[in-house]
Length: 195
Length: 380
Image (cartoon, rainbow over all chains, first blue to last red; front, side, top):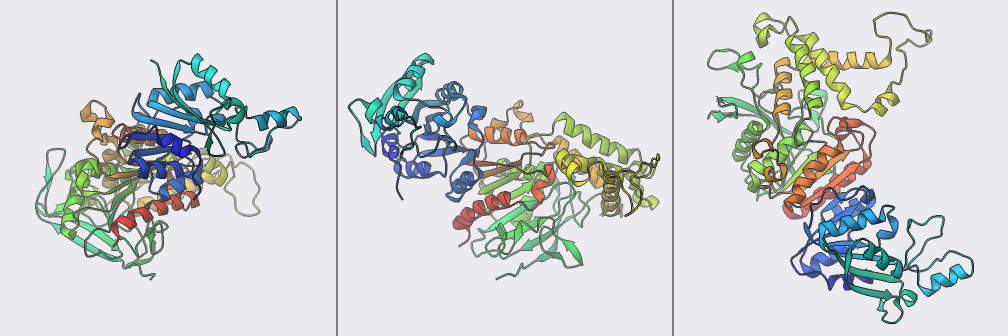
């Protein structure tokens, strides 16, 4: 199975035998990966019936709920790590979910496709919305409801008082060091609340 | 293999069972049906707990009445979500019920008269204590799973906290950690219908050769409304008039059955009052009212569920307004607070509370998937 490029990067920030909550966990691929790799106690949150079923088939803990509704099921600082992996761009209540994520997690990992990648800028410059490996949808069928770049995320984190502890930017599975907002297609942040 | 291996038996218990009310009951029977076969390690047993009006007859055809199909036959059986080719499934009729286990209709061996009003008030916890004795008798040290819907889910939850080491998985469907004031109010209307029936005779109607049929009928009509969703009723009956084919679709300006929904409720009430015992209805609705594991922890459900060691599957249905998804979420939250292993699914189904008994592909796929994992651990 082809593992998503961000899995290894996230695993580096996860302490063995800790607890981890994956918001928008999909079919549970990451949870299955991290559970074996770091022996963590995992829970996923997912809205889609098919994804919930896939998680149950894998024997994973999964809670069916809509992230737009917030995280009332989870107490403050109740998880060592909360992961919001390539899900932020699909949520309308952006500020709310970010506040909730740092409320529940002692540390949080937030990843998203970088709309600032040069190929996306180029597509827009040519007059079309970008379709790429990291944004594989047409404008009319995309689940992505928020369009953001690395610079945008960092500005919002600052506004919300979210502390950025680490960042890895990837393109095609490789780490991008130089002008990441132009050359990176996937941004992964390690953050925490400051309250 | 498609054999259900249905075996019905009545098991007698001599020793007194202490009850939460402070009294006890001795020399009682529990009627049990089992399906499938217990493996050598006795690790593949699943206990199915029934709700208000059901019984030990969970699956298959009643050997005494071929028209009587088990109440969860779509869930339990060979190659069903709870596969009796792999699991040994037990259905038990609870104490106080009226399908063969000792209840208010039974003869009290001390008086040689029916218990009637003297039958002790029971709680969910009492039932679980009785079920534990049954497990001992059947040689089951730990259930692979205890499962139930509605009131049955309350029993499953109680197992997980009263006997945490004796249950590996706990499956709680369309249930609640406690009844709301509205839930209790509906139960009270139902009980009042029975209590105010002139044939009730303070609960000792058996010796008068009557049953409070009209009270029980009304109780069932009220109850039945709470099992269906508004949408489901609109879909099934709408405002259709109950008319013979070809009869004019006009009002008759009478208090006889006018609307299809009235005819349906009366039919349900008639059917139910023909086979169910009124004292049992009182007793079971009261057990529902009393269930509140958080009560002795100052309302803290997380603390109440903290002894649980089982893996949980909690399922709710979107249009269930009797025990709504919010009530299931309270259970899930308390389990999460304890970092218990839990999965929760909210099934988008139109059928209200009754959905837990009905065939729904998403629901059954989920339960099947869950029990396939249970089988990997327990069915060798």
